Image (cartoon, rainbow, N blue to C red; front, side, top):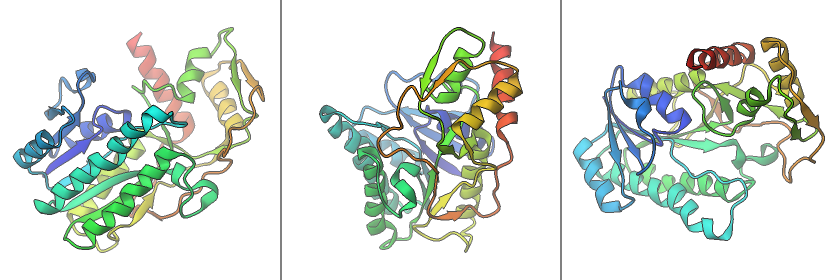
Length: 299
C-alpha cells in the first residue's frame, strides 16, 4: 500500500515511517533544511517541498497514495502577531490542499492528527490558543470533503508524548539534562495531571488505524475523533518521583517557582472514542528506562 506521511521528520512522524516502511511504500513530505539522517537506512521516498501548491500537487499525482497520515503542524503555545500567517498556512491551508487532492484522486483514507489543546476543561471545543483553533478549523473544513465524497476521514487526538530520539525541549528531556546535577529547574506547583504516551504505543495506534481504514472496518466512523487511553494518569510531581526512583537519580526542581499558566490543563480529558483493538502497553517506568538505555548506547 502507498502511504503519504506529512511531518515525517518530526518525533512521531519518523517513528511511524520507520514502522510502516517495512510493509508499505512510504513517501514523506519534508521542508528544506530538515535533517534526513534518520532515514539513511530506510526505504522511504522523501519529498523536499518548496512550499508551492503546484509542486505539492505534482508530487501527489506522481506518488498517488492510497492513504494519507497527516502529522505536520506548526505548534505555537502563545503566538506572536507575525506568526499568524505561517500558523494558518501550515495548519489550515497546507492540509486543505491535501484534502482537495485526496478527493480528486480517490484517496481511500486520511488520518488527521488533533491536539488535546482543542478541548480545555473537557469541552467538545474550547481551544486554548490559535494553534488549537487552527486544528479544529481543519476538522471543520474536512466535513465538506468527506461528506460529499468517498474519502474516509478520521482524527487521532494526541496528548503528551515522549520516547527515545526526541530532540524537542520537552519536560522529560529537561529532567534527563538536570538529573544528578546542581542545575535547578523552576516549575509550577506540579499538581496538574498528565496523560503520557510512549512513542511505540503511538506508532501502534497509527498502524492500527491504517489497518482498520484499509479494511473499511465498520467500527470506524467517518469524521470520527479517536483518542489514546493512557495506562495511568499521574500528577507532574508524581511522575518526577517515579523518574527519580526508577533511575536512582535526584532532580533539583523548585516546585511552585512559577504559577500555573493561564488556562492550565489540570486534568486531561479527550472527547471522542478509543481506537478499536488498541491499548497502551508501555508504562512510564519502562519508557524512561528505554530512553536511558538509548542515551547510554549513544555516549
